[in-house]
Image (cartoon, rainbow, N blue to C red; front, side, top):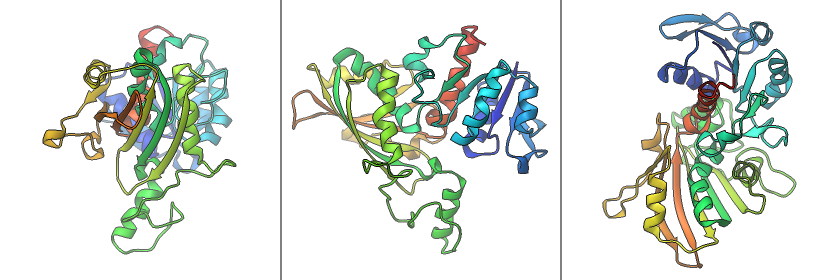
Length: 329
């Protein structure tokens, strides 16, 4: 099996390649793809040097699967060309997520929707993935009426330029800015551009994507997304209004039995999820699980995950693994 990774030299692309090796994905040829300036460079995979290809060269090689993480413009320009050549595309950008003809997949939640006819499959936003993995079982059992989201998002979600900005600021150097403001010793309440309703694009992803993944347009959702000077891992404070009564112990048990979730919740010993502990892990960590005493059937959760892994690369490769397992490619 041939697998192309489009955006192979970017932060997420590098993690995808690392995970293909770690998880022993059943491929016999890796096709790393990047922009023209990177074509001809070599990357390491399973102890061998593999040459970076151009997009067109990769299309001509007709891989069974193409994993995209090169931004929305690249996805819009080339995903359909790969699909026309018979390749199944799993796209990590926002390009296809809300397209009604494309599936938006978190494997533990809705992989069962996938068929052989799905040639372009959308990977959700990083913050959406970790949240939906925790909320889907709660919604199924108790029903969710309203979700209030506050995110604390790592600069790795922005990319290499943001990492360089933070490092420059920490060492007192000047350099290119990924953000409009200093990020060192600061929090910026803006992730992505502002929309006409004064929400950011990131916040509207958090509003819209869970409805599609969980198949419920009636969900009432509001979000505030904040960029924080953390090198890896997104954290989220989630407040839920449930439709039915619950016991906190039941919620903890439900989540602890959910595939891909690790419950870390022991306030007496100051045990709770933090980005520091989620780094380089594939699980979603949930803690600070407690009743919201200000409303009937209210629940608070704190959800943390490595945004480059489960929030991006891991979820993408889990989709690919499902396709192979079910004979859909």
